Image 1 (tube, helix red, strand yellow):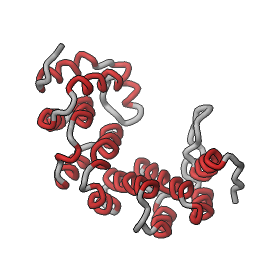
Image 2: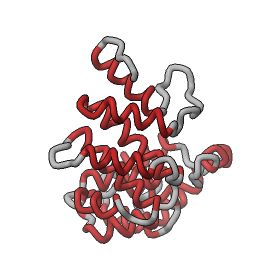
Image 3: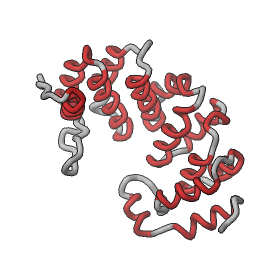
Image 4: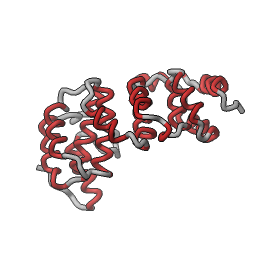
Length: 228
């Protein structure tokens, strides 16, 4: 079994790289070829090693960075370090794991949320919207939900894909979690038609906000919710 040294881990990751997985991931904007179940098994073996996590991140390799995010200690990163990491995380999976597994657990999450939300870089802004969606659901006190809807209404239609996806998720969660804003959230979604024709596998809920909101509220209530 390889040791928990940078060289040993990088060799192990290289041995796990599968060209078929990489080919599939490239279609979604990612660039690694390691099975994520096997990656998680390595992380389970390593457990928590902050310095190794920093070394793995510094390689710039996406698989190594994903592993770093699994073995790091989220609260050990300072605000500027997390900001720099996000700006370096240019593939969707690395960005997603960084935000969800690390930043959301950081004491700097709220400061970063407000800074990133209006960042001119749409990838960085998408992370700000992801953190905002978390607050919409779990800690909405102090959020100006009507103001968020204003911003979404004005900017989501023309936003780049990743930013648009994050704004749409926030729109849907506002409609799902806050009944007083539900009608407006559905109306915005219907008028903007963002992701209306997104291919959705059988049994899955469409990301089109009006459908998403209606279906989740129906499930939660056990009744049919009428759309406007």
